[in-house]
Length: 191
Image 1 (cartoon, rainbow, N blue to C red):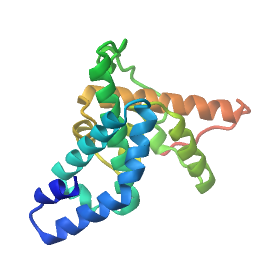
Image 2 (cartoon, rainbow, N blue to C red; image 1 turned 90 degrees about the horizontal axis):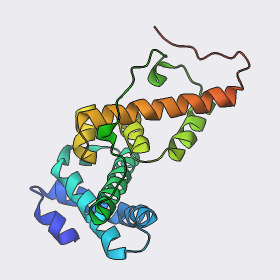
Image 3 (spheres, rainbow, N blue to C red; image 1 turned 180 degrees about the vertical axis):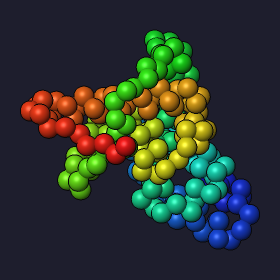
Image 4 (cartoon, helix red, strand yellow; image 1 turned 30 degrees about the vertical axis):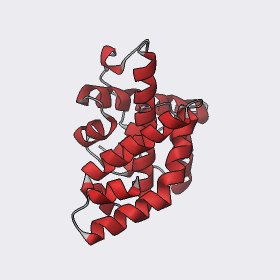
């Protein structure tokens, strides 16, 4: 597959970067796909292939630092795997398009002041979110992509991205309220 991806590149520098990314993240991507697609190795490989194609279509993402690029790529893989499973089953019960976002009057999570320890705890809690909530939060706050860019990468509409973001932040708020034990600690907001 690497030769196929390299054939899509225009410069030697792009070829080197694609080679680094492919060799560095291929196995992590396959493991991520296999976690979602448990019984079909071929379908998991298809998810990885589709993710690399999406990444190559947006060549500017190849310039991201490795850590951010890995998060991005794994999020794309996870979503491509989910897409492939949906295509096979054709009976997903609820789609995000059917959900209505509810405007929040609470302080947005991105405006909260958090310490380094709380930041680590937040990352752990984000990992517990289901898809696509986790991917939307990671892409929005750790890679700093816009809703439109997230939608393009994850093949979601803007409304789906906004809804996923809303529900993800609500779930994270509930986790933090529970962890605070309602002991009077308040979240400090800017603005």
